[in-house]
Length: 292
Image (cartoon, rainbow, N blue to C red; front, top):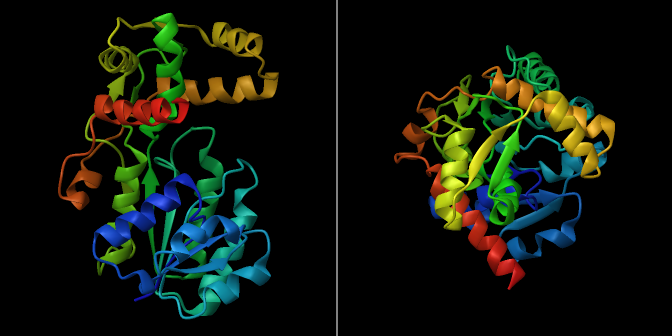
């Protein structure tokens, strides 16, 4: 079995490759791809085949898929422009006779009101229409998304947001990457739609408490209205559209769009997911190392 990872130079893709190797995949059975092949040198040094694959350039996709059985399609990073890019990969996978296509989607993509969901819903529909055997893994928020909040709290002692009492079943990138590796390596899973998230759905009082444990100081959560958060974001330098996008996500959190957790990820991993405090501690340690 040959497994191709798209966007392997990205933060999630790199961890998926690591997880595949840790779970026994041979380097020669992995193809790491990216738009910029110079960012793949770390994989080549480990005996992993590398190839150019640019979602926006279909002529790069077919050659990369030569001899590949299984593909992880990591969603593109530009909201609103993903679907056509994903379609290029889906079409190439169908033409290549790929036996398993795994796609990293968004939580409850077909039913949620989350502002990020429409691209993912459309991609899931395109995969189904293609007939390519597939598995959908709907990744909840990365715990690492809150690294900046913890960093600010180190000096302010405050985490402020318009999420209200909303909960987030976040997981670390490493846990989500390992979940993808399990699905890629194991027989079966075809036709499944997995909601991947942490074992615990936490609220922002819990986030403040976890940040306090990591920082060794008191941290409190301050509830903002949507209007107050928009104003705060704009005063920090964000334009109106970006501030509106951020607060739309927070509205989704407040309404429960990221609160689902059913234990699927930990079941596939064979262990509990990383706790919020341990996930924040790890990312804070990385930041400290980078600053040293």
